[in-house]
Image (tube, rainbow, N blue to C red; front, side, top):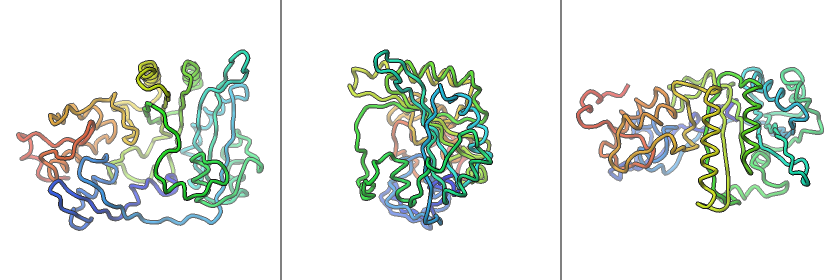
Length: 352
């Protein structure tokens, strides 16, 4: 529902945190600087979050979902190019359509493959209004009534998550995945549609892997209206969609090298088509290829290699807040926010 209401972090109105001294704070006692930092500033850099208080948002009693598949033989490349032009800027903010992209076998004897693009959607409303919107804004998908399922919001969550029909919603309370494998993920943000030639090059690289996955998640709507500095998450106005790249395998270290090599080459290939200076990345898909802290010897200059990609200009404010609330760097990990070194701290006492 991010195109309608923004991120979960945008809707946090209070929190409780344990600081480096073991004290427990709520929003009032932690102060607005720290409250700003923990809403999207990367987990485990500032303290231990005990709970969030989140503003609830209105959702209609009936929502509509659909999944429509299109292969290369059905014009998937041209359709995906059109999707990039409308998904963020022209579609109603009640409508979220992501595209799940993966190679599929079309002939088991020959092993021939195609690329399948799955258009998977959640619409905050009924099927009649959805069909009107799609007919006006994205008729190329040729959505029909029989493609659509009217359901409740909770069941739509189950649907998008891929649970089989009839699965009880209590499964969401387990908090753990039902499948286990090894994987490597990377991310990009896109501000200009990837040309068809660029997509065709992507297809070639997907054919090289046994189990790759690429997902386009649309932005726009409310995401374009919230200022970049509102919370640490900066990927707002102008972003068309976010890309997640994923490769998975089963045999641990035995197969790791080939999968890591493949996804890094894919990431290099996509460089001309995504954001630049910095090439932005999504902090929740932690990518240690972007750089890591060296145990307790953390350099804020080296940390800029990933900090600017995750947070853009907000990284500088995060560093100042870290220096203020955890100067000894008690809370740290491979890509945590570093404090300023001692010689530079006098000039950073005021957080702006």
